[in-house]
Image 1 (cartoon, helix red, strand yellow):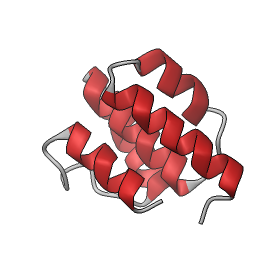
Image 2: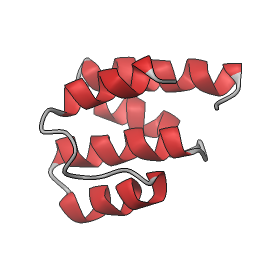
Image 3: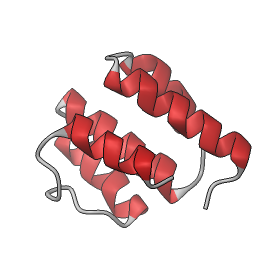
Image 4: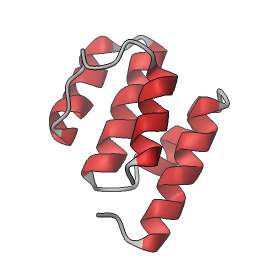
Length: 82
């Protein structure tokens, strides 16, 4: 479970990602070291179309690359479960 500061940062990162601010989201999640941050990072690279890098982050997050077809729905799911 992320601490309150990390949770706030993760929510901010998801907000950026959903609103197509890929770089702003990436700057946040690349500096956090939690499975939730890794999962958001994975979704970002899925959005970018970098499947190899995305699968790396999904593995670190212990999540499945194939579980969601819609990255925005996946981000909402992550946000609802922080």
